[in-house]
Amino acid sequence: MRCILDQITRRKFLQIAGGITFLSLTPVGKGVFAGPTTERPLPLFTAIPYIQPGSASLLTEGQDTLVIAWQTQNLPASFEVYYGLGKKFDHSAPVVVGERTVGGPATPFALGQLPGATPLDETKRLSYSASLSGLQLGKTYHYRVIGNGEVIAEGYATSRKPRGTAVRFVALGDNSCDDVKAADLGDRAVAYYAYQSHPDFIMNTGDNVYESGLDSEYSRYFFPVYNAGTADPKVGAPLLRSIPLYTVMANHDVSDKVPVAAGSTTTTAGADFNKKPDSLAYYTAMYMPSNGPSTLTSPTPIVCDDSALLAQFKDCAGSRFPSMANYSFDYGDIHFLCIDSNEYVDPTDQALQSWIAQDLTSTEATWKFVVYHHPAFNVGGEHYLEQHMRVLSPLLEVNGVDLVLHGHEHTYQRTQPLKFVPTDITRASMISSKNRTVPGVFTVDRDFDGVTKTVPNGIIYITTGAGGKELYDPGYTDAPSKWLHPEDNNVAYVAKFYSALHSLTLIEVDGNTVTLKQQNENGDIVDQVTITKA
Ligand SMILES: [Fe+2]
Image (cartoon, rainbow, N blue to C red; front, side, top):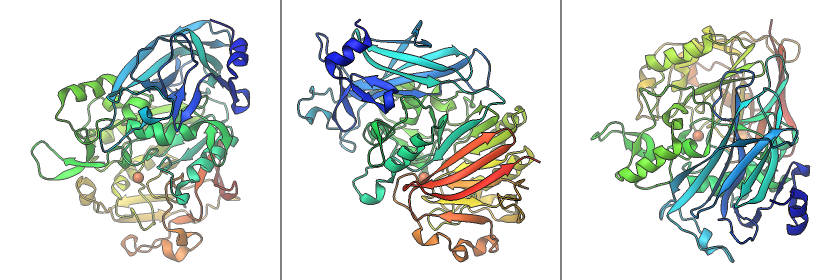
C-alpha cells in the first residue's frame, strides 16, 4: 500500500470538505463512484463511505461505537478498515457484507447505462459495514478504507460526547427526494446549512428518503446530497463521512398497503417486497442503536412471496430488524427516545408503553427528547387527522420529557409548552384508518416566551418536516387564525408556524440551557427560543 499523499498526487485525488476527507473515488454519475484504475479494479460505488452511530446506546467509557458503511454493485472486492486516535490507524475493524436485491421495473437503476461505467449486475447490490467498537467517549477517530489494496477513503468521526459536555445537533425531516422540481431543491441548502452549523450529529425526523425508502432511492437521492463532495447550497454537503445521522421509521419507509394480518382484506402501511424488492433500506443502510424491543405487538408489516428474497433482507439487516424500529441513546446531557409512529403502530399498546416508561425512567440525563415522525400536535392541513401519537403525551409528561421532535408535515411548527389529557383514544388504535383523531383537554403554558420566561410548564412539540420535499401550507406562516381547529376547541397551542421556505432546526444543549433556532434555506433564522431548567 502506497502512502496516501503519493496516491493523492498520482491520481489527482479530490480534496473535499476542507480537508476532512480525501477520496480516490470519483463520481461517474449521480450517486455513482468509481475507484482507482488498478490491476484489480473496484466495483462501482453506489454509496461512498459514510458514518453511522452504531449499536451503543448508553454512554459508557470505552464502549462506544461508530460504523463506517458503503455500498457497491455486485462484483467481488476485498475491503479493509483501519482506525485509531491521532491518525495512527492501529486498529482494524472487521468488514461485513450483506446483499440487497436491486429494485425491479418499479425502481429502475440505470447504473449500467452510464457512459464508461462497468456493466452492472442488475440483480444485487452489496452493503458493506465495519463496526468500530470499544471507543472512548468524545474522541475523534481517524479511519481509512482500503479496497483491493488501495486506500480509497480517509476521514474522521467523533464518538458521542460524555455527560457534562455541550452538544450541538441539527434536526430535519422529509428531505431527500427526486429533486427534479425546483420546489424540491431545498434539501441541498438544508444539508449545506446543517454542515455550516458544525453539528455533533444529525437527527432526521423521518421520511429521509422518498418515495418508498428503497435501497436504490438512498443511492440516488440521499447519499449524493448528504455525502456530497463539496459544501454548496445547490449541491449539498459532505456531512455523512464524518457526522453520524440518526433517523426514525416513517411513512415513506412503508409506502405500500398490506393486509393487517395474513388473509385479511383490511390493509395498513407496510412493505411489499413483491413490488419493491429493495424495500426497507432503513434496516439495512442505517446502523443505529439496537436496544429496542426485539418483539413488537406492531412490527413493520412485510409482504413477500419469495422466501429467498426475504431471507436476504433479514440476513442483511441482522438484529437491526425489527429492533431498530424503536431505540434510545444518550448524547451528552440528553437522553433520546426514538419511536416508530407508522400507521401500523397502535400507541395504546401496553407492551410499547411499558417499554417507553421503562426507558424514560431508567435515565438520569438532564434532558429527555423524544423523536417520532407523525406529529401529535400539528395544525397544518395535510396530516391533521393522524393524531394517534397524542395517546403517549401523558406518559411522556409524567416521565419528564422536555421536547418532542417530529416531521411528516412539510412545515416548521413550534407549540407552546403544553399538557394534554386524551378524552377518547378509540381512533388511535385504528391502524387501517387515516382518521386517528384523539380529542382531549389542553393545558397550555402561556407564560413561556423563550426569551425572558424560559422555564416551560409542559412539553414543547417541534414539527421540523420542511427539510426538502415540497412544502405544505405556505399561507400559514405568521397567520395564527389558520392555526385553530374546532376539533381542538380552537385552543391556540402553536406559537410559531413557518412554511415560506425549507428549513432545519439547530439545537444546542449546554448544561441547563437549550437554545433552539430554525434556519431557512437562505440561512436566515426564522425562530429562536431558549429553554431552561428551573
Ligand atoms: Fe411523512
